[in-house]
Length: 345
Image (cartoon, rainbow, N blue to C red; front, side, top):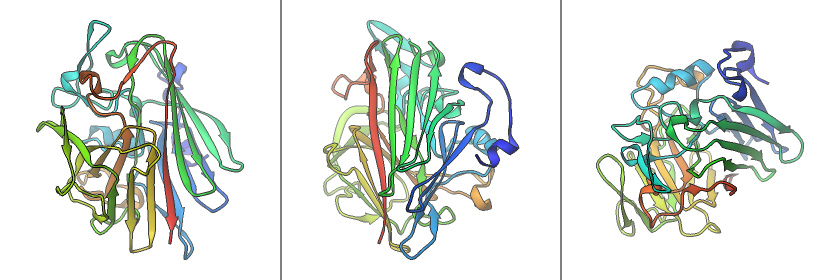
């Protein structure tokens, strides 16, 4: 356990979900890769990757206190550093969708739309930290019970999330969920990565995206339902290119058997590769804290501080019949897995 417990003990709100009880866990694999997890938002607060020449580097943005994580949701644009996003990642147009002949109106929290699950979503909830394994391939499982009609989503949704550090320096994230009523689900992870640490921008790091299509969106970032070819466009990252200063797009992935995205930092010869069973990856460069909240080690995060690889279903999927299914029926199991693999050359 870490300093989070010493600094914050109890703010009891909802015992059924251990609401207000701060808990954390640290895992280390045999190669020295270290993971720190906080139960507020099932958040990854630190991911230290060993370098070939010795030492480790923390490759995710974050804060030094729980209070800073909480306050970050009041920023002009909440960064969701390291958080688990749900019930539904991405935007749902006007917060409305139809399910079983009924129109559902979700809480709106983004210019008249629903984003990342609503006003007080999974990223702001206290999860139960359980099943800690500190042996080979160390792991921790967290769980959360989302009540029926929370943020106006139908059904009571029971979620389990497992973080594993493999001995091959992989961060493996596995999700499972079941519901008491038909509902929609789209869970993802929201770390901002910077392979040069969290004190610099990432414009010199090289990005590769294994995709030939992305979702067309409106000016409000709502999918139109159309797919856009990326080949020979500014969004063609089939070959390594420097990270763009602005990107906030969902890319259609080729196959779950192939890599989705890779990132490489020539300054320390560190690379990461993302694999997922999901049909898309939403890529976003950002991390701005508007000189309001200090990041780790007293850093000022800005709009080029990190890059997100949100492996997920497509945003607004419930409103597009040709998008991958986002409905979880009662009695069925929602599950998917994403892998973030790191290599030092």
